[in-house]
Every structure is written in structure tokens, then in C-alpha cells.
Amino acid sequence: MRFIAQISLPAQKFNELLRDGSAGKKIGNILEDTKPEAAYFTSKNGTRGGYVVYNIAQASDIPRYAEPWFLTFEALVEFMPAMVPEELQKAGLDEIAKKWG
Image (cartoon, rainbow, N blue to C red):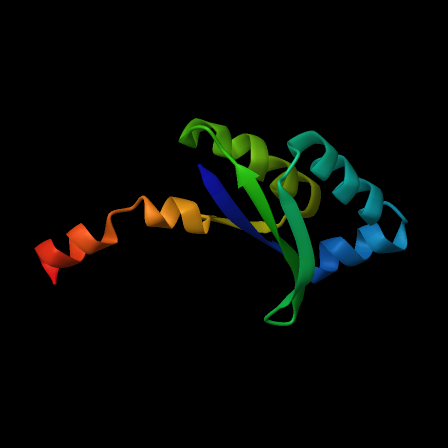
């Protein structure tokens, strides 16, 4: 199942890693190890972070994707299930609306 992980990087910890020159390499190592479908870095609510798209087979695999961010950056990580348009079309929204609408 596809998940979008919202990563929030605490300023103090990230600033330390920026100053010692290791932040970029550490991000690269995480991305290389977890092999996301896509990764976008931005800011949200005044803090650094990003959105990383992972295809995760089962819930017990989530720590494999979250822990590197927690342990390396003391990041906040939120996983949100996501669908591409073709998956949404298979959801049966018309039938659900008929039943519950």
C-alpha cells in the first residue's frame, strides 16, 4: 500500500547536523536505504521537512521507514495512506454513495 510520510525536522537537531556538514549525507543514506517512490523537501509551519512516498507491504514494515528519520534527526513522522487515480476508481465510490448517501 502506498503511504505518504510527512517528515518534520526539528530545527535544533537539524541545525547541528547542517553545521557539522552531515545533514545532506544522512538524508541521502536514509533515501538510499528506504528507496521511496518519490521525495519532496519543503517547509511546513515554519519547520524544515518533506513528503516521502513509500510503497509499504504491511503495517509491521512501517518502523523500517520511520525509525531512520526518528533516530537520525529526532523527526516527527506521520504516515498517510494514499491512492493513485486508478486505485481510487477501484474503490467503489458509487456503490458506497448509494448505500450511505
